Image 1 (spheres, helix red, strand yellow):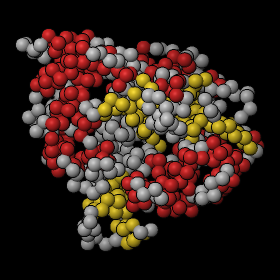
Image 2 (tube, one colour):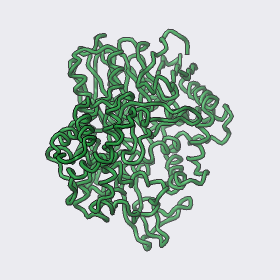
Image 3 (cartoon, helix red, strand yellow):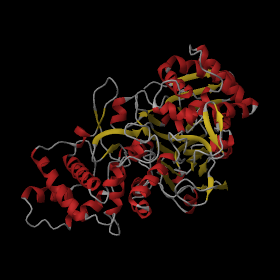
Image 4 (tube, rainbow, N blue to C red):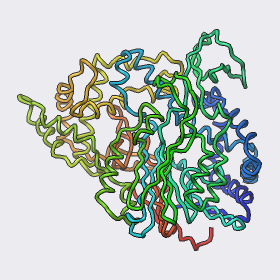
Length: 603
């Protein structure tokens, strides 16, 4: 495990040293992000960044920073240049933040809903409504001091993104001796300080995506008045991000574009934070992405809050509604004998103000079960929560299969049904029954996507830039959407698309998958992640597990999205905290974590 350890006298000196060390340790990553910020690679992703005017937003946000924060960011940029990346500008770190989160909003989700309404009708939007598979998967939780073996809170988290090696997060320890700053945490290489996950010794915080709807889509005609900014047509509704050949298209307004702010004013207050109240105040500067944040300190205080600017919407649900102000942030103090779970899911009345759809409740329900079963947790038990592979939605499959009439079906079909009904619902890497279930699920998804009632979903979208191989194709692929909706359709009160006979789909899929009984394979043999230049890693878990490892049922069982870090912050003794990132391949693939370096060792 490689942790970037940086020490300086002042926070400004720390920023310079962090920038230089990052340039030396993560040169390829910084060059890649710099190319995206500058939109120089000619890829659809860069074209999207250019059309969204992300660089312009970064420049304007840099100009609006307070003097101290700007000096901190500029010192980091100077350090990167001293490390050999001469093209790094003072505002590039803000561009990196913008690029990392440009698609964390609801743009792709709204494009999907528009596509469903066009090809199946407005009623199908609700029937197929399910949370954005590209944005969920993360878990975070906190237990109050009375629930901890140490007597002080524990905070756990495992953010999810597209998995890469080296990973998107860098483990760091940052020390500024003159200001008594000593922070461990995760940072995006190219951005100073720590952002989403940090432990200052006396206070710690972690986040999940709150799934807020922060992007507004507006169809504009070719006659819509517009200016041209940095070569991009800009309307009153924002940049024309998606454009048809005739000049019409879709303008996209985002919160950072609207307020010329990317939230970096939170960075220094987070480094200096000593208490829950300090972190809470720092996060008042946060903009995007909107996060569920769990914070705990050595005095036993615990807070759950939503951080970021959330537009108040008119409830249209398709991204075209007007914004009428800002939502008041949600805050709740968590008691010493309580716990709090966030898993991108709907949590209460405040969630309705964030978005129309949030993540399925399965991971949150499972974490609630695990925490309810453990009145008191120690650090090692807390870390083990990350590796839980129980797939709660599978209970609905088992119930439907148990009731299925298979009279006259071959013995092998009945055997497969009985194996899955008796399965323990754990998506363990060594489980043959988990692989049998996944094979059945994929067969059902394929049949549903080919069903006449759903086949129109495979038609090209009427929106530009959404054809095969283009940037938004994953958001418009029907298989993962149908797979997620299928979990809900199989519930006792579930209602599939009219005309779809789920019993018949299950029966036909059992016939298709039954031959796999003759050549059994384990889940981890097909559910793999292959780092560039490395061997395939066998993984357990699944989209709906706490160990959330995302594949595309009906298409490919290989993992494309998963945990990009895992951590447990211990407030009683920071050095007993645990963490990992995908760079530590063996530990990461096992769903495990590694001990943190003792605090008394020099950074």
